[in-house]
Image (cartoon, rainbow, N blue to C red):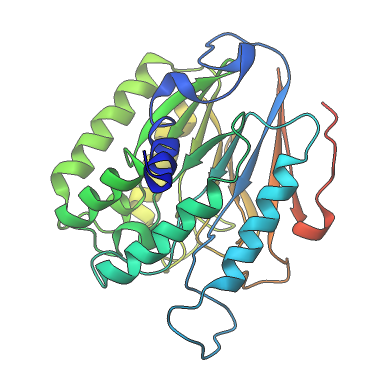
Length: 300
């Protein structure tokens, strides 16, 4: 078996719900004790900000940041249950330049295969991963490379739901897939209503306020309000997002929307970094750290 094939299998094995997390936490619908996980966003190999002219095949800086992030995560004591990358794994959209997209995806896989085997990797689909206006081809490319673009899993008594927000941002060419995700989500929320539920997605419903104007970095108001009512009514406590390349938080009723800055190319005051999320029986505590300030041990 080739090394590239082995790396591909590393992604595939984390598609199934039963295979995320470790020890008593993996696939456990009952509270199993305090645990934590890591959130990163927008590794986005091929994109740098502020924009600088460089070779179009040069994304070494973004790769180096991800390598540092993985080293920091691997050295944590105890290790986290899993690492989530909240979308925009690479920069070039598959429906813009499939060859360049594949080169960036190959490097993403090589870099993130360095993650310690005990730490599950959860990839969230971003707009750069399927296109601003995804089509059947770009969705299939993503699924064949990374697995399902929306899915769920249990870890330590918490249900985690992973959504593809392009189905809310622009479903015009993939209405069938958008309807299938919505039906799946409704069934999950109805079945597990008022259990502990956390959502991961790429584009935030809003950046800081529920009534903020529509823009590139959020989801249109009508969809936003309807979905947040739906999620809140089902007991979802947190929605963790990326896309904004900055840190931001905001509340809608009992639900907190948390946006994490980029590993690859931050646009705000916070440097490249990661968010540590601690899960307690009746509480969730999250903190963003720059890569330089990541702790070496975690107290739960």
